[in-house]
Image (tube, rainbow, N blue to C red; front, side):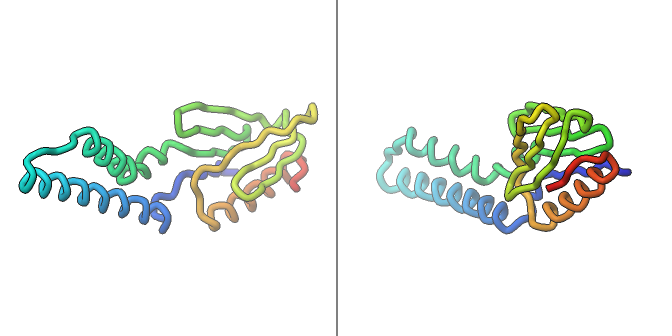
Length: 145
């Protein structure tokens, strides 16, 4: 069985709106700085710097969000977070799997519950994830809730 990988989809409407607002804000701040310098001659550089940095973070946010991923294979589940932290969950230690709104809940053999937050996703990706998890849990004889 092939492995399933859930990555951030940067082509969603939500991400495009964030990127557009960041670009719009960047143009606004650059325009205000140039107009203020032309007519008044003085610029408050601290406010200008903060505005430009914030708008740049909105404009380039989706590129940094691509680092998040979730890979499900025959061996288990591996998760890469936004900050580069990696976690691995083996199927041998898992008793049950459940997909909720934006997370996967794994019930371990000892009874504890581990929650894995899903990366930014679409409804189709979650639907494919649920189908794949049902197939894997059937082959591994793990309960799927």
